[in-house]
Image 1 (cartoon, rainbow, N blue to C red):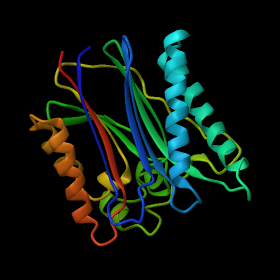
Image 2: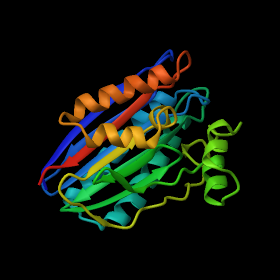
Image 3: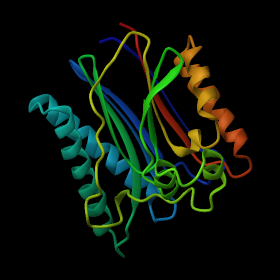
Image 4: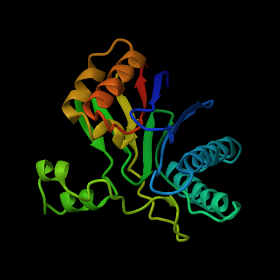
Length: 246
C-alpha cells in the first residue's frame, strides 16, 4: 500500500518539548507512533523517547517474527511500559517518569491501532471521522457513560487527568486494541497529542486534512492554530498523518 506521510512536533508555550513521534516503513507494513511525555512527572521527555524506541525495536522484531497485529500491540506496548519503568529505576535518585502513547500499524491494507492515555487516533474517510480512540481519562469515561456533555467536558476541572500511562505504576495498564479496518484510497489516519485536539474542533481538523493537497503543510497549519488557540499556555503539539495513495 502506498502512503503519504507527514509529522509535526512544536514546543508551544512550554520550556521544552516532551513529545516524540516516529513513522517507520517496512516491506509490507507501516508503524506510526506519537508519545506525549507527562510533564507532571520527572523526565517525561525521556519516558516518551524510551517508549518510542521500544516500539521501534518491537516493530523490527515483527519483521523477523511476524505476529497478528493485535498480539503485536499487546507485546510492544507491554515492553514499552517495562522499558519506561526500567528507565526510572536506573536513575539516582529513582524517579517515576511516565508517558502517554498512541500507535497505528498498517499491514497490507489493514489498519489497527492501540493507545494508552488521551492521545488520539482518527480515521478520516470522505471528510468524515469513521473511527477514533476513546480517551483513557476521567472525562473520557464520563463522556462514554453519558454523564456529561461534550461542552461540559471542555471545561471540566479534571479534563487533563488520564487514567493510565506507560511507566509510573508497576502494573501494566490495559491496552485497548482496535478491530481491524480495511483501508481505502484517500483514507487519512491521524495520530495526535491533546495539544492538538483539545484546542481545535474535530470538524475543523478533519476539514483541513480532507482539503489538503500537501499533508505536511496541513499539519503545520493545524499545529500553529492549536498553539495560537492555547496562548499563552499552549501545550506541546505533535501529530502524524498517513494518507492512502493507492
